[in-house]
Image (tube, rainbow over the protein chains, first blue to last red):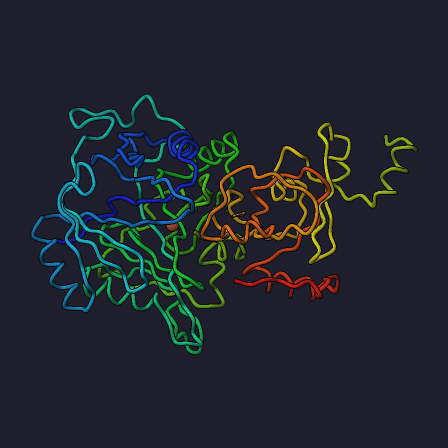
Length: 314
Length: 146
Ligand code: FES
Ligand SMILES: [Fe+2]
């Protein structure tokens, strides 16, 4: 059936000790291993595969790559053919390129972001197991994030030069990778410019999102929480840990998600995203947000854009 | 009740609500930080970075992003004064050559003396435009765009 869900993100960090403290104490992840290059691998308590976040030591912040899991090994071969036929070159990285992970199909989205697809990652189980499990484990720390939920990639958009990597990514993701569009922001004359899109493969409102900006980059990676009360508690945890909060608890019009945006110690933006939003299905009518209502789409309560939210990313 | 003497100090400082609340808290040494783009200045403690010091007082002047040295939005040129680097600075935003010239990230340096700085880089334009709109910008400042 192709892509299942987001599998992991690989982020560059400038201070590994501070980064691990942040993802463990604030998000509630657990470090599962460190490789000989000093890369650290972490996982959330409700995830069953070995890791969902890789931190790599660097002199800058940002995204190395984002990976999605496919259902079967054959999906990788089929997708490789389709992607190549579309005109995008790919590389099949051999098993073991990443620890506990099978071969990975590597390519760049039209926006330039590196994406990898894989079918196998060692299953270690959730922290409550799968025989008569309790609803949550006893050693939850910080916000107690359930799982890595989605990522938002900033893509070059310049109407003057006609560059629109949001539209290009969206076309590629829907036609080749099998994502379906759930929501979009359209701007410009007659809404002719697709400036932001939200796409799904699973039944949540988005597994990936693309937003237009002056240059490509990572806007945020998001972690799932149950509900609004968990969002409040997560904000308390951030205050206790002196985390820089970018946008305090609020709700998105787009996806209906309940949210907090904040920064990791290297300046990579994180989100805690709560609630189902709605049942995303390929036949659900696409939701469109127009330029005049963009503020409400992003931050539903105030309807106002926050400058740092739109202008700052890594 | 505000004593007569206190009131005098308040008036002399053209206080706002926050400075009124925070002016007597200063147990750590502070240094004045001047942002030439707007002519604004604010006191920053020597144990906090220039951006955090500004934000904590509810002041503006330098664009605010991650406050963690990664996004580059707070890129400044130190025109005078001494600062100390207090955390990693993303090389994606400040090259070694730039750093040698006194360009840095406001969120990664703490003051060691009175500091005069100017905002540079990609946010400089809207920022300067804003200053111009407010009629208080000293627009002669050269900004070195990327
Ligand atoms: S605010 Fe992001 S680098 Fe200073
Ligand atoms: Fe998000």
